[in-house]
Image (cartoon, rainbow, N blue to C red):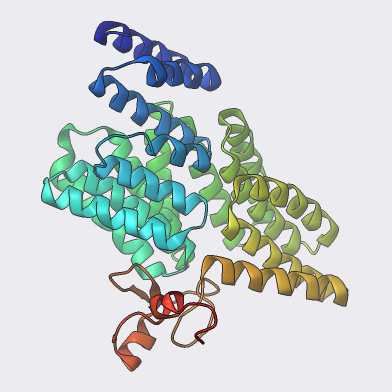
Length: 363
């Protein structure tokens, strides 16, 4: 396949993608990847595939795409980081984000730096260091203001969305609403359905935080409709988590369990371990209220298995990471710890790495 034909097929895929025929677009792009010998075309189509899989929450497919033998640059590192984050493999996600950030700094690539900052905001939101979760999208917004006159408005919209998420987590609900409204306005202007779905989810979460469940439910329904339309299964897990919490506020525990069952099936299919951990945590609360001791114990055990599997604990104090808002600090190996533990104990090497390097039978 020559350069001109490669370009035509990429444009054909983009046309299909923009008209919401995502599966057809993916098939066209995969054929280009298989048949084209043009390095520039292959690189461009790889970016299309990664973006499409990311918006659909297909993180395993993203990782397959990024293993194509091409130069590993900042864009691919960022995409791999987002994929690992979707799979709840936090150390590898952080390693990839740091690689992408170094590439951005070394090449003075402000657009890439902006996108990495948004992803780092998402990363720290998930592990509940809300100070960093706000810092990074604020940095992204600064980059847009300083350098982004010729950029797509999507960069501003994404930074505002991630700021909204962090503000909500910090309890600054008025700020969260302002940022989310700004992001939604841009998403509507540009017909950006994936971002519209995320903003609707954020609006619903803000209303739930205000315990305004009746306003939250329709927002969750609208977000779920778009997430289903675009095939974002991870987004559907997040929506169902919010719906579950609304049912719990209303003390409708059986309805909450129905939502959990749907979310669990999706999270297991995606390999999203953090989603499963959150679901086990919610089940633990429900079964404690219902005084069903066996079910309660089962979910406590599964919760701790998820913590161990994701290494979501501080290697110094042994406490879980991600249960509550805590300041965290990563070492050069990308293992992260409570900041207070590092300040108290110092950093004479990573205790997690030392444990991993000890062979069985040597302990």
